[in-house]
Length: 338
Image (cartoon, rainbow, N blue to C red; front, side, top):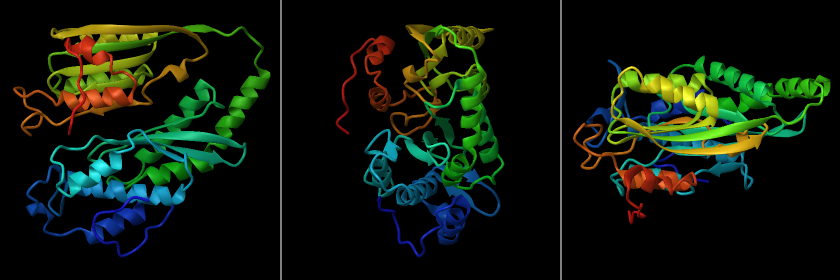
C-alpha cells in the first residue's frame, strides 16, 4: 500500500475513476494557481491543473489498484522506485520531474480461465492526457489481440476528459475479454495445421540532433501506430527514436519519417532476429512511448539545452538496452548518483 500525500476524507469506489476524480476535485485548493513550482498542463476560466495535482491523482489511483490487487505479482511496477520518486518530488525532496509511472496488472478472466496482462504507461499530465494501455495474453492470437486493444482504446476514448480511467480499463477487460478468447479458440480449431512461419524481427535505434516540432512528433507517432510498432520517441535535444516489430514495417517507418526533408537524422544501430510465430516475446517495449526528460537547468524543451541523458540511461537499463547508450553517443553511460 502506498502512502498518499495529504489527508484522505473518504475511500473511493473500487470500480473506477469518476468517484476518485470528483473526490479529488472537492479536495483541490482553490488557490492552487499560486503554486510556486507548478507546471501547468490544462487551464480554462474555471480552474487550472498542474503536474503536481496530476501526480497526486495518479498516486491515489495506484492506491486503489493495490487494494483491488493485493497479491504479490498481480501488479508489477516497471521501476520499483517509481512511486517513491513521485512522492519525493511532491514533497520537494527532489527537484527533477520523476520518470513516468509504468506498470502491468495481471487481470484474471473467469471464463475461460486465463489471465490478461494490462500494460499501463502514465504521462505526467494524466488524467488530462490519455494513458497508454495495451492488453496482452499468450492465449490470444495476434488478430484478436489487436481487436481487443482497438475496442479497449475506443472505450477509454469515450470517457470524459480528465477522468482517472485505469480502473475502468481493468473492469472493461474483465467484462469483455472472453469473446476474444473464444474467437481465438474457434480459429485455432478450424484452421488447417501449417508449418510455423518464420519472421524477421527488427529493432532500429535512430538518432537525431533534436526533435521539437509537434507536427514531426505527430508524424512519428501516427506512423508507428499504423505499422504496429512499439518503442519510444525521446523528445528534445538530442532526439532518439526506437522502433521494433516486423522488419518490413520498421523499414517502412524509417522511409516515411526521413522524407522529404529530415536532414539531421541517422539510423545508428539495427538488431535483427529470425524467429517463428509473431515475435511478441521479443519486444522490449509494450507500447510506443513519448519520452520527455527534464533539460539541464530546468528550462524545459529549449533548443539550446540538452536533455538529461542520465535519466535516459536509467530508462535504457530498465529495458535491457544499456549497451545502446555508447552506440548512440560514443561514450559509456555512467550510473547517476542522484
